[in-house]
Image 1 (spheres, each protein chain N blue to C red):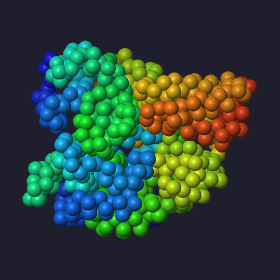
Image 2: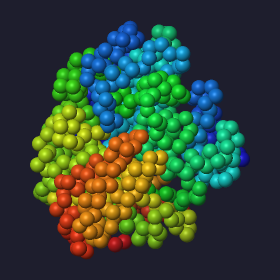
Image 3: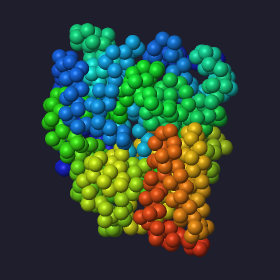
Image 4: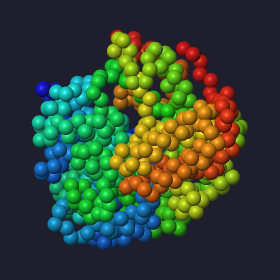
Length: 437
Length: 160
C-alpha cells in the first residue's frame, strides 16, 4: 500500500498500479498492459518514437522542464561509439519524494520507458543511478531487471526483435550534487560528483564519453503511456506546452500530505485545500515553496496559480521537481531560509568559488541573523552575496541556493527586520513542544 | 583482505556492468557495499579497492572524502539518521533530533558507549510527504514522533 491514501481528484496514469497487490512484479505489470508499449515501439522507427514523445509535450520531471523529445532528438543518429540511456534516481531535492514511489511500486514501467528510449536513440545499455540511502529500492529494481531479462523483455534479443537492451542499477553514496546530470555521470564513472563543463552536453558526450540520454525517473516512467495511448492523448491531460500529469509531493503544514498525481496546470490553492486537506488547526497559509527547495517561495496571495512550468516561470519561481512545501502562519521565514542554506552549503561540491564560499557566508549570516545577532545592513548583504553567486557557477547548484534566498529576503523583509537588535525569533514560542524523555 | 562470498558476487556483477576498460566505474558502490560489511572505509579497504580497480589509493581517498555516506570510522550497530531539512523541520524534525540526542546522551555523529546507537543529522532523505522521517541503517521510518522514536530505540535495545 502506498504511503498515503489516494485523492479522488487524482488522474492516475503513472501511478495507476500503486496499491495493486505485488505491483512491482512482472506478472502484475503484464496483466495491466505492461510492455505493450515496448512491443508497439519495436514496430516503429526511431524517428516515429521521438515524434510521439515530442507530441506528448512531456517535459523533464527532474526540475529543468526541458522537452524530453527534443532532448532525445539531440543524440546523433550515427555514432562510432555506443550510446547510453541513464535514469536519474538520485532523488534529493528537499520536498521531493516521488521517484522513490515510482521505482518501488512500478519498476517495470521505468524499465520499459528506458528500453523505448534505447530504441529511439539506438542505445543498448541503460543505467539507473539511485541514491545510496534507497538501498531497498535498489533491491526492488535489481529483482525487476532480472525478471524482465528472464522473460525476454530485456537482454540481447528482446521479444525476438533482434534489438538488445540491458539495464544496470548503480548506487550512489550520499550526494545531492550527483542529481545534477554531469555530476551524476562523473559518479557513475567512479569519481567525485563534480560537474562537467558543457558543452559538450550528454547527448553528444555523456556516460563513458559516449552519446547519452539522461532523464529523471518520472520522465521515463511516462514514456510507456505515451507510446501506448499516443502522444496527443498524454498532451491533452495537461496545459499547452506542459503535457500530461505530474506527481506532486505535498509536504509541510497539511492535513493530508502525500504524493498525488494531478494534471499539469492544477491550481495550487486547490492542491493545498482540496487534495492536501488544508492546513491543520485552521491556521492561515503564509507561503509555499512550489517545486523543491531550489524554487523561490510564493507568498500566500501568489498561490492562486496553475502548477505548470510556464505559469511558475511567469511568477518568477519554478515548477522544479514537484515538491510543494506548505508553510502556515507560524512559520519563521528566516529559519526556513537558514535551514535551506545549511543544506546548500553542505552539498556544494566546492569546485566553483562563488558557490563554495557564497553558500558558506550565507549560512553564517543566516545563522547569526536567526540568533538575533544580525544587523540591519546584513539584510541587504544576504541578498548581495546571493546575487553574486547567481550565474557564476558551472552547475545550477549555485543558482539553486541563491534564488530562494533572494526571494525570502525580498518577500519577507519584515520578518528579517523583526529579528534585529537582539530580539528573539518572534515565532520561537510557537514551535511544537516536545516532551523530555 | 577477504570479503564474504555474497560481497564478492556483488563485486563481480558490478564489474560486468560497464564497458570494457571502465571497471573503475564500480568504485562508489563497491566502497559503500564493502563499508556495509566491515563497518567503515578502513585504510586496508582503500588499498584493496584501489588494487582491484587499478587506481591509486589517493584517488580512492578523494572519492571517499566526497560522499557523505562513506565514513572512515564505524558508527553504532543502529545508525539513526534524522532528517531536519525543510519538510521535516516544519513537522518537528529538529525537535526529534534534539530529543534523540537527549534520550541517548550523545551528540551528532557520536556513538553510545555500548556501540549500539549513533545519531546523525542528515539532509533530505526523500520522504518529505511523510515527515519527519528517519532512516535506521537502511530502514525508513515515517511520521516519527518522539514517543515512536523512544519505542523504536527501546525495542532495538531489547534485542541485545
